[in-house]
Amino acid sequence: MSSLHRTFLIAALLAATPAAAETIPGSRIVIIDGDTVALPVGERLRLLDIDAPESFRSSCEAELVAGLKAKERLRQLLRDQDVTIERSGRDRFKRSLGRLFPEDGDVGEILLTERLALPYVPGRKAERDAHWCGSRR
Image (cartoon, rainbow, N blue to C red; front, side, top):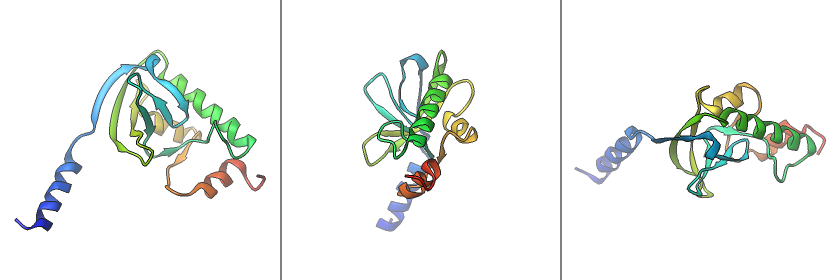
């Protein structure tokens, strides 16, 4: 088998590997902001595919207000429920990437549907700032 074929085989096997999952009480999850949480083992998890406004080091007051709303909504979605965690790799800051599933479904999808987060697009800070802060910065 050539090294190219071996590379494709390994990539296919990794793609087919299901995400690691576990379930913990939502009360044990600490909300950092609308798209990042801390898990009981000291692990930070960034929600996949969403970008919530910043509630710390916001670019403007409107982003701060929106960030606090997203953070509170995430807290409501996780409170008093068992939450299934599906991890899927790490980001450039070494945080775990994944999804959180309480009884209501994928919290990232809920935040998107409720317009409390944007779809994640890497490297688009100016567009995120324009969305949350408008032209007034």
